[in-house]
Length: 308
Image (cartoon, rainbow, N blue to C red; front, side, top):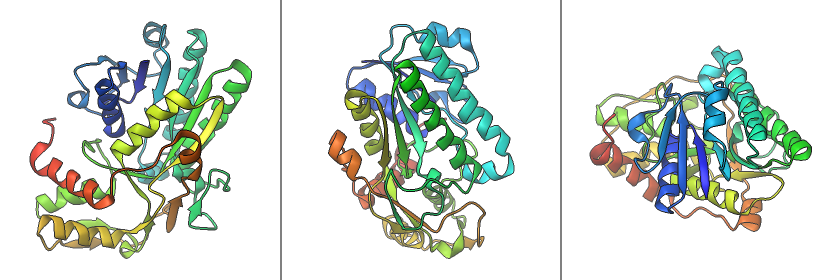
């Protein structure tokens, strides 16, 4: 398989690139390094620094490729409330530029990193792909609207796609600049003996999925999906945020200090993925237990962190 990974210098993207290279696929990475890091990109792939706004660069990269894994995005929920227009320009308009380049160069499949944030505050904690989508922040809306573009490009131009609605991804290499992801921030703070930032008293319930499992979902989707598909990618079970703090204390052997910032706009109380569709259609299910993944992440930041 010959593949382009947009956003391949980021957290999920760099893990996906490594997984693809380990399977001997030919990989090209496109990343503008606005939030990613060149040092995270596997040396076995070809790297281009640039954005999807550069049509000439895309026309150079895309010919002859089998699939695009589209992960490049502006991805912080908190900041989307402050600068919503930026999110729609980058996440929607940037994606359209990529689709147009794929159409010009006859690349017929795209695997899109979407988000469970598109569900908003669901009526029930467990959400299916058919559940109502009512995003409550600009980030979730910007990710969801591109799924509609993918449907249109499949039916109009035959470009097949799978939209993978990620829930809360965690794991090594979470080095995104200006990231607000909880677990990586907590581990970094704990190692510096700084307070851990919580919201809502840590009462939120979240579905955490390990990044290597997410990479496997992308690869399976590229190999098996046909037409236009949407899949939840999560663990299929929830965990209370304050319980994660307790697990970190046990793993790290520390009593951690907490700073509770209270309510946060655009932050649902509980969202958990129903993953029955992706299991049935692609044969995917999570393999990494949460406690194992959490320890792997602590070990990464303690001992194996890439020098960036």
